[in-house]
Structure formats: structure tokens, C-alpha cells
Image (cartoon, rainbow, N blue to C red; front, side):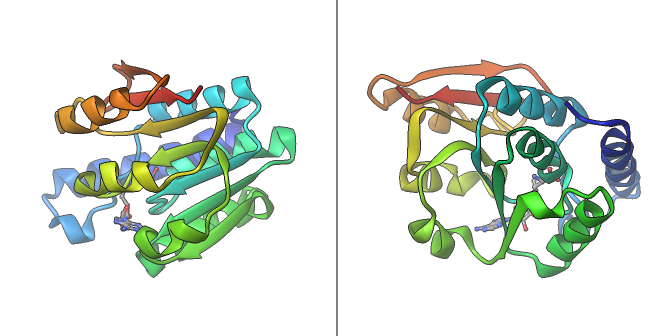
Length: 189
Ligand SMILES: C[S@@+](CC[C@H](N)C(=O)[O-])C[C@H]1O[C@@H](n2cnc3c(N)ncnc32)[C@H](O)[C@@H]1O
């Protein structure tokens, strides 16, 4: 589970995001972090299914990275964190280093479209990048039997095309959770 210093770090990042929103900063200057409730859910799900090989697309400054790395610690697993913005990733790395979680994270700075072809099979994947890329990235994933793909912003951005797309995949089970901005949780057969 998330430990107190991890919850505090998530809260600090979240409070900054809220003040940036309130200040009306342009999108490029705002940190679009995952909601703390979604982070707690992600951590619990990863722990519950014992996911050892995890991937996130869109790590930003690190709320989801803290959640998944914290779960990875319990099973000696690994999280690959892909982020295109080097400054955000540097901040995340520093935060995770202070939390003693950096050793569970393999940071990759780059565009996921170029990185994904070389990513091995995963037990749990978080999609939290630009919404128009979700379907293309979903189709590029190699997910293990019983593995999960979780996508954020499903309700906030009405990502009905994504939901319809994943639910067409043979044998998957998929459900939208009304947590944070809406999480689509898709389990592979
Ligand atoms: C919503 S934020 C992610 C929030 C993060 N998961 C967290 O918990 O704080 C989306 C991030 O995706 C990154 N991104 C967008 N397109 C990307 C791509 N093609 N490859 C890698 N990262 C990408 C953006 O730079 C941005 O930092």
C-alpha cells in the first residue's frame, strides 16, 4: 500500500496542480497529474493482482509513478515509465529517489510511439497521455494473460471510442470506474 511519505508526495504534487489550474496557466505549463484517488486505486489494483511487469505511458511529474512503483516494491517488480517531456521526467526521478522508489522504475524519455515496439509483455499498463493516442497505443501493447490496461480521463473526456474499441477485443472484460476522471479497467483473458 501507499506509505505515508508517498501519500504526502502525491498530495504535494496534487496541490501544485490545483494551484496551476486556479492560476489559469496554459496547458503546456500545467502539470496534468492523476487524481490521488485514482493513484490509490491503481496501487491497490496492481498489488491485488500481483503485477510484476508494469508500464505507464505519460508519467509526467510522477503521481502515477509513485503509485505503481510503490506496488512494484511489494513484489520486487518493475515499472517502465515513458514520458516525452524531459523536465517532467527529471522531476519525477528526483521525487522517486527521495522516496527510495527509483530502483523500481526504468525511466524512458521519448515518444511512446517509438518506444512501445521494443517493450516486452506487461502485466499492467496505464494509459495517461494524449487521449487521441489511446486506441493506437492500446493496439501496440503486449499484455499478459490476466493482465490489465487502465486508461484515465474516460469520463472527463467522454472517451467513448476508446471504450468501444477495447470492448471489441475478443474475450476482454472491461469496466468504467467512476474514480477521479474516470478509469477504464480492461482485463485480458
Ligand atoms: C496527463 S499527464 C500524465 C500524468 C501522470 N500520469 C501523473 O500521474 O502525474 C500526460 C503526460 O503524457 C505525456 N505524453 C503525451 N504524449 C506522449 C507520448 N506520445 N509519449 C510519451 N509521453 C507522452 C505528456 O508530456 C504529459 O506529461
